[in-house]
Amino acid sequence: MTSRVVVTGLGVVAPTGVGVADHWAATLTGSCRISELPAWDGAGEGGRRPPFRSAGQVPDFEAETFVPSRVRVQTDRWTWLALAATQLAFADAALDPAGHDPYELSVVTAGGSGGNEFGQREIDTLWRNGPHTVSAYQSIGWFYAASSGQISIRHQLKSACGVLVADGAGGIDALASAARQIRRGVRAVVTGGTESPLSPYALACQAALPGLSTEAGPADAYRPFAGGASGQVPGEGGAMLIVEDAEFARERGAPQIYAEVAGTAATHDGHHPVDPADGCGQLARAMRLALERAGCTPAEVDVVFADGAGEPRRDALEAAALREVFGARRVPVTVPKTMTGRLCSGGAALDLAWAALALAHDTVPPSACPPGTGEELGLDLVTEARPAAGVRTALVVARGLGGFNSAAVLRAPR
Image 1 (tube, one colour):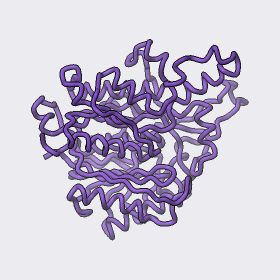
Image 2 (cartoon, one colour):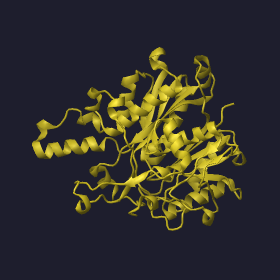
Image 3 (cartoon, helix red, strand yellow):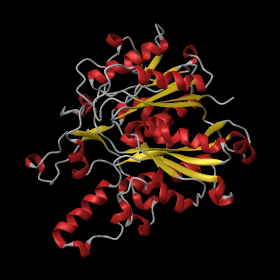
């Protein structure tokens, strides 16, 4: 086998659509898919409101289309989204795991808040009706590794499976783990992440975190790199990717190769449980390491998929890191997650899917909602789709609460 790792399948379940085709079509319009959250108790205008007003919500997702009833009762919505995205990714890659040695296939996901809606329901049952009424599946339904476990069971993926927890950076870390497995002999890995943190319990847990927007209007709630940006909004959904050994993909006749995983890196600020470090050194280091491992210079990067915190201080730190890595060069920077909100463990995975599609279609997807131009921070911020942009190399940047920094370099297939 070769040491080359390639992306052959994408499964997207996000506010921008279910399935790659719908997602990409919505992406090119640049329309914001962040919407207002309903009152918690359904009492209309006078109902109790969530601690923030807007979120990225997946419309018209029908779990029964993807998840059998016997599995739905055991699992939370975030796992339903992961199972759906995995099914879509396998179909997109034309890879039937049943036709291959299960010990040469695995799954590595990013985990975040876990099955919070499931947990909320069972905690409520506990207090209302007593411990004898709590579902036996409470012990597994909320668990942050539930999606990896359920995907492994459903598709019989029996090589080393796992989950990585690094908040918004986790999707890149999961991809890095998948690439290491392939270089050690595994043929194909399902990797990515999903999130569904919009239940009252999950929103309450997030309410005290810094950097959350309280803007009432969805179009104004999340505007990274813009003057007067007020913070981020949460969202549900994410993406799953099929990554394979390039030789295995060729041997089995994979219908397409979206991108090659050229290099990944992760660093940590080591500063504070919540606040970012004062400088951008570790974030810039993650970018440089990913480029170095890809054998790539900053001059070769055609687009950066930025983390885009949406909070002035964090945005300024990221912009400083980009200037440190790219110097005076104004590389195109995009934050397409402005259409969906920040999806925690699903966010970097969705950015990786966006980057793979950008390479496949030679188009830089836009930022939305509108984030501004980035001029005040010295950025060439992409606010309209740029087709025929000569996209051959993409840098994906992600940060997680608590100091996680990750970066990945994807290249167009050779």
